[in-house]
Image 1 (tube, helix red, strand yellow):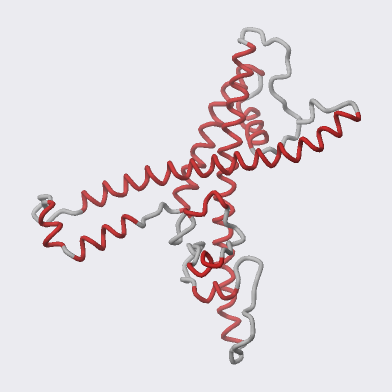
Image 2 (cartoon, rainbow, N blue to C red):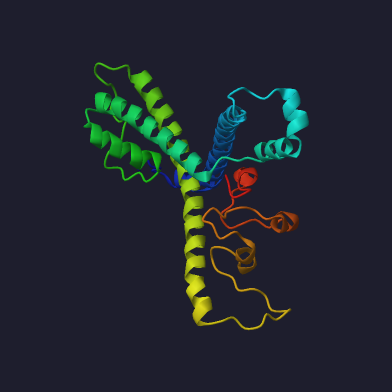
Length: 263
């Protein structure tokens, strides 16, 4: 928030070099946190999906099919459903909703602590939580600046302040990353919608075998030609993974989750 700054030349030089390593390590920590969170969300949602799928496998008389009948009689259909479950991934919108709910929950709990300890209004505390958790840090409201807090345990309050800021920043960072994926999908969808009238008015010329496909800043042209025209088209194609090339919006920690148009 700018409340504590280096005053000497040596401190300022040290801050510049320390900031290079510190900021890089912080981004790595946030990416690892995002990977673990999405892994947990994927496991929980997949288990819920499997339970709903198992309950849906019932004959018309309302009795559950035995394991032997499913293995023998179902045959190919049962194997196909098993393969669908094995490759099932949670939707990016479900992950965004869960991360948004977690960020709101952390902000509401932290606002209760700040309104009681700092004497702020609840809405002001919510505003401070968003500014602090999103690392905007205007500095108009700063927590834990008093030497002693009357009626509150100072050490416990500062520990809670550290815990809420760390948790809130991780949640908001993860939410921002997932929202960026959704924005990219929307931009890809809009570009395809805009290209459809252009193809009608200006038909394309004959394709030259040595001419490279046209590109844009969101997705390469040769990838847009292969993709399904739905909005959820942020998958990694096999041709991309073979050459080691990554999409512009792919994060290293989320490599396994950006497949099959899912996170």
